Image (cartoon, rainbow, N blue to C red):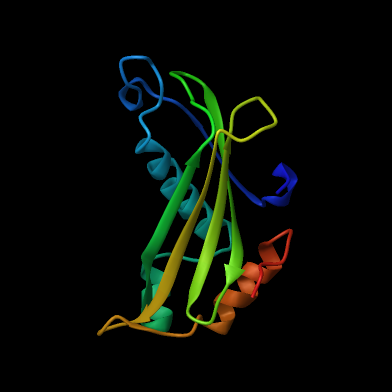
Length: 146
């Protein structure tokens, strides 16, 4: 995936509290960076999540799977870019793809999160609402797989 294929980019600087004794980002913090990028994604597509989504559709998303590949290490005070896109739209699920960069052209981390859409109450899988699909398809630079 090319860096330019991402419409949502969250920028941050590594804080002291996020590094270990070697001044390298502790691996679990990358998931926090990714979670913050997802919040930026919702804002970028104009979705008031979670409140607006819950009220409008009576549904919510639940994380089903997270996979992270560590290709390099970020260090204290480095500027990072967390690139986020929806790579796949299923019937009841969506897959986010992430790449985390610093100045170099190769990513430090790649990751995927799979979320399942569920009707409330009961948390039973439910089809993704068409208005959500439409927002995602209008926003993405590369159409998600289906």
